[in-house]
Amino acid sequence: MVVIISLGIAFIVPLLFLYFLRRFDLYSTGKYRFNFVTLFCGIVAYALAAQINPAMVNAGWVTWDQVIRLTAPIVEEILKSIILIYLIQRADFNYVVDGALYGFGAGIGFAIIENVEYVTGNPEIALFVALARVFSTNLMHATGSGLIGTALAYRRGDSSWRAAVVIAFGYIFSIGLHMLFNTMVNAGAFLTVAIAFGLTGMALIWFVIKRGLNVQKTWMMKTLNTGDDRVSRQEAKAIQNIEDLRKLLIPVGERFGADKVLLVEKIILNQAEMGIKRKLLESTPNKSKKAEVEMIIASLEIEVDVLRNRVGFYCMMFVRSVYLAPEVKIWSAISDRIAESSTGQKGGGLWDRVTDRVKQPPSQDDKS
Image (cartoon, helix red, strand yellow):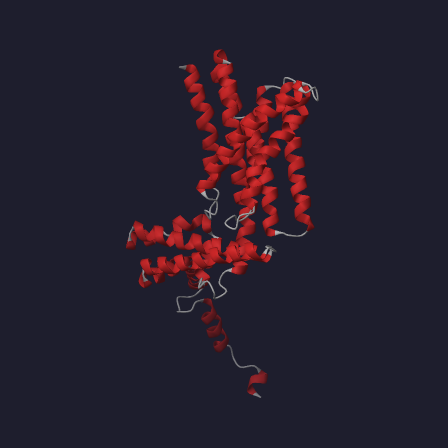
């Protein structure tokens, strides 16, 4: 029973980490099906590494100690990244947020299967092994491939020589991080240190995702509202402040129902993806890939038109007035300040100053 519970922890907790990070994909550009693909490919990467690492020892090329500290990090990070290289070439891939999430998923898939080997191989301390690994080794694997995914994804927004430097740095940094962790654990480092290492890695991925979201916001504000996408200024502002979208749409749900809220939310997310895709067109040199991206943009435009018709004209007008609420509040606040500074006369302090000016006797210049 302890082993079964331990295996449950070894499976569920890493997946919860992935689910937690997916919540930061505020524009929903990452596809769930690719998360499952990367998980599966992470499992395949582990199966391949389990064959390659012992084969290198049996061939006499390296010792087990050298495998743990040196060659395994190189082999494993490269194997985990193969699926990322493929996904990032696809037209429906977006930017670093997707790369970080897909890379994290590949690392989690690798770690989950590795957990099974360690838990079942140590049944007397299975629970301890499961808990220790999910908060240390698992996060290290996910961080390494997540950073490589981020570096590979950077190329989608920058086709210059800098992209190659970033990719090389991403691999070197991730492999170096993996080597440092393995060396530290193999040398008998305290469990708390290993856990701190893993949690720091997850915090790093979270930081990368947040930075990626800020870049995406900048892209969208530059590319949306061009007239082609029929995105209003208010809708573009809502996309930029996507974190508050659910809160903004509360009045819509109260007046028109929850089904309309879901449709409006889908409109906003589609418009966000259109903005990202239009920016990516600038850094896509391949003509066939550009054509694929343009087809995706066209399909998103059609879907947005269909959704707008389903939402209805009156509801869409109401939605746009909701988005303007912050501006209305600002002007209301200004009016309140004017009223507070007045003597009760409509218009406030401005008219008070005019009144005082009128009451003053005319100056010599005025008389002349």
